[in-house]
Amino acid sequence: MAESKPRPSDDVSITSALRLRAANIRRSVEADPSLRLPATCYIGGAAWGCVFYVGAYEAMWDCFGKERLQTMSFLGDSAGALLALGMALSRPPSALDELYTTLATKGAARGVVGRMSTYHQEAMEALLFRSNDDDDDDDAETGGDALDSLNESGRFGCGVTTASFASCGEHHFVTSFASLQVLFDSLHGSMHIPFYCAFDVHRPCIARVGGRRVVDGAYAMAGSSFPFPRDTLSVYVAPGPAVDVACDPALSPKECLYPFTGARFHEVRRLGYEAMLRWAEGAIAQSTEQQSSAAAGGGVLCVASAEEGKTAAAATTALATIPKVGPNGEQLWAPDWPMLYAFWPLRMAEELVWWIQAGRQKATAVAKRHPMGVVSLVLAFALQLRRTRWVQDFVARGRGGFKTRGRKTALAVVVLLTVWGRWGTGFGRGTVRGSLGAWVGSHARTIGWQGQKAEEEEA
Image (spheres, rainbow, N blue to C red):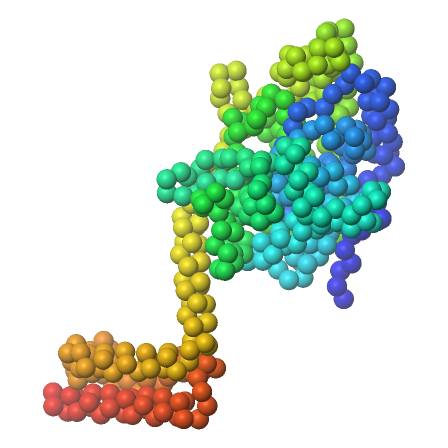
């Protein structure tokens, strides 16, 4: 019997005590309109460990509300980019919760290696194309509406890592999308791990952005990549010197390769909720202590008077979050160079396999459309090859290890079965197959007879 997927209604992990803490934070924020959220929120990568971000986003929604969250921009790498898309579109936490549990159930049942891009595509379509029942809005939103909203607001960006010969290990945020296909390709590229994710030989751009090969954006992410290094809330599944909201205990990379279901799903989701509550409580406490300053903040929240506007916000940027770069420009958020350089040759190997499969599929398609042409080509090539001197010498002297009649006959049978299995469905009936079989059989007997004669002469 299949395991039942956890539903948002099965909310046993986020207790009433946690909800009460979130309600107290909400009242504190509403009582002081001078509190402002940071300019951006960065969601790191974690594959299936992104359930931690689902819990963190639910806490943000409960603590600050939808309207305040709409003043933030959301950036992400890898799986974090997918969730950042939902956050930038103001999807409710229940939608992200439902999305994760649905895909996790499929992943647990069907497997994940080589199928991840399929799950990614389903998730993107679910976030971009929603029905009237998804929230309280009257009108349904189409993919085009969501794309227009992202481009007009500029509130979403997904990171990619270049993996080409000319530029390897460069991190870029893609923030403008000319079409839905560009958005899909950018997100696929941001989450692409060679051979772990699937690739479509009919669309070789699925792991390319701007014509360049890319891999998972999280591996080249650095402090200097943030558009606002001192005014960004960073959320990640492991602690770090530049991480504001971290999972404790940290999730291991091995653990994140497989879906979280059942009790583990609820546990990690609760860890995300609690971590965000701790950050919010600490930020409000620091902000309350510094109310006498003209523009001061603590943690991620900071005070900015309405009169000073953007000037005050810029003046308090250094106090808004943990800086992502040091005072001398050092990277407090450093790239994962060992993993990045390990992925580069894998990405090259994947590219080779990619084009081999594409060529094989194209050849198969041609064979099905023009079966007689393929038969003629194979026969002409075989007969021409038969006349060459080195092939005759090979057959006569039995070089290459095929010295006995049995081995040569077996080789001919293998060749016949291979050709028959690859293009047999494209051939005509009766005459063509019979002629080909007779020709290969005769050729096999000839090879065996000549090999035996050569051995007798040598003896």
